[in-house]
Figure 1 (cartoon, rainbow, N blue to C red):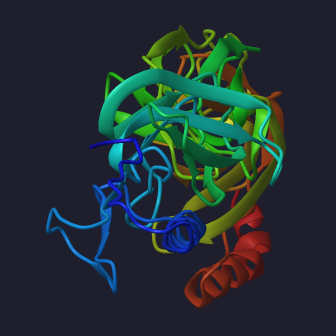
Figure 2: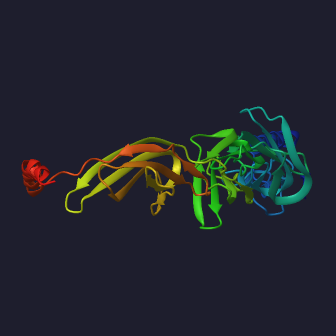
Length: 382
């Protein structure tokens, strides 16, 4: 019989009856003190008028003791464990040796469980409880409790888990301070993250990647060396300290058109006489404030039209150009010209220079001396 004490006593003396009652009480104390398993259905005692022995033979003095109502549910294995976790929730799972209810008590301090998540008694030995409304990157301490239909309760030891960070979310993305060759990307993230900006020039698929040095929530990244009047497509990659990444959809912007002409400065000249060709080789050098192509215009003093040299197309800031066929000992007007990639043209002031006199050869010197010697005789015959 379950959950009852049954006994059958033959007709004996009072002393034997008292001894049997004392013996039964001692057995009951042992059972409750050491907590028998719930699947132990009964313990039986039988005796004759002369001796006592345990067994399941149905004669003599016999007692049935059920332990089902007196043992708490046993939490099996290593106890509860986290089987699923996200930044905002966690699932706790455990097993018991008999059907019982499910409750999880948890909090952010060890030994302090100020929140409970539970189910009603569901007659199950497999228990799963989901904890919701958690905070990211927070350590939680928890215990589980299981109670059977008789009110006996088993409890686990304290365990701990930590929620991860979610993927960072980029917000308030904007392209600010757009200039001819520069733009500033501004945005925020909901958690500390380190970010990079990838921009692509659709014309040549040239990619520009600019990152930031550290973790932040407010981000400002400056893009330099852009092409003026050019459409760019950019996206943001944000990564938190745990390696979680998020990518934004592309955002487009166009740089301003370059309307500024290159500024020419530090114009210098150097001339050398080519004795074989009776010509002067002129070298002109100058600097500009931006990358640009190079050419010069020049003419002899008194001439109406400038001669324009071929353009050197390389876009540079330090310019160097040679005029090979200048006349010696001649006055020239020379102008340096630079054109940037947007077609803006910078022109220097007009410089007036005198090319050097051609050097005389040894034969020319002899002829000049002879001419000087015989020049008086020539006058006599005039």
